[in-house]
Length: 364
Ligand code: PHE
Image (cartoon, rainbow, N blue to C red; front, side):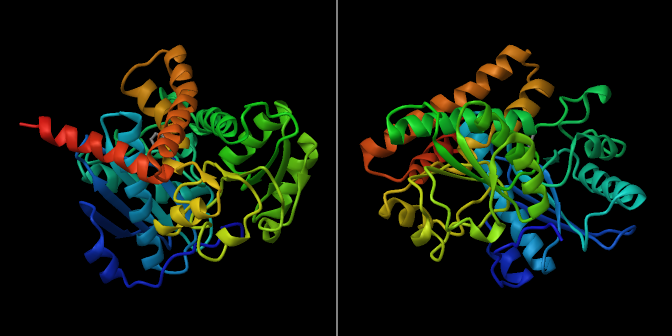
């Protein structure tokens, strides 16, 4: 229970490995627990591949590898758009159920060993269902890890920074679409109230938005709704809820041929990685007059904090500035999309590929 449904394709492992444009697919069956550890290294063109470690259930090993690939690919774009000297990668821990206690610890140690064996090609971090406390365990086996707890010398949980960046970008997008960034009374549906979604829902509520929440774990959504005085709806009802903004903050693949015609909002902007099932979904959204903010532009706050604090030694004010800057980045991206008659996705892709091409060109 608790894991969102993954809308993976039914492609075979062989097809996935053969067709991916990434640099490496690493797989290891865990010794200690019934789990598959897989790491996708998409690109090291700008630097070592950085990206979080996702722990969840999948319906097959192929689905886990496909998710690692797709998430790693998005990290390459995210880091390029933020202008950070890193490539993209991701680790997926595919488990039959979320382990706790010793089983969890053993699995994280094995991840640490695998990351260490890659000699710095890939640097891990928290993602869905993993935290700074987990990264302390990973760090017992490797130094290639972001976001350990503050007590262990890391920057701590990246989720508050991700939520702050998402809010800055969301406000900019609201101003673009509705003409004012005033959140008062604006209805925002937050799908998924995990580490980032919960914080986003709280921030938006504090700022006067009319927040509605849902989660595949309905109890979790109900509890949060009661605590912060907002409305919770059943997970399956998300497409029926009329709102100004839909903010996906759970698993990816929720925007597709089936769901886009049914959306009842003018703006989609949220923290979830890989919201589109396929590229053409960006055109489908545009055709319906719905503005979609590319996820990897909006959700870079965690990376900015992790990389900024731990490797670039940014002081807290610089981190805060960079999180606010997500708003300016989103505003200029949406303006450019309008001026050029392109989708926001096409503009973001151009930004990312320009940076990667420039880095390749200056390499001797
Ligand atoms: N989960 C983060 C993301 O998807 C990954 C991350 C956080 C990577 C912090 C590096 C540092 O962007």
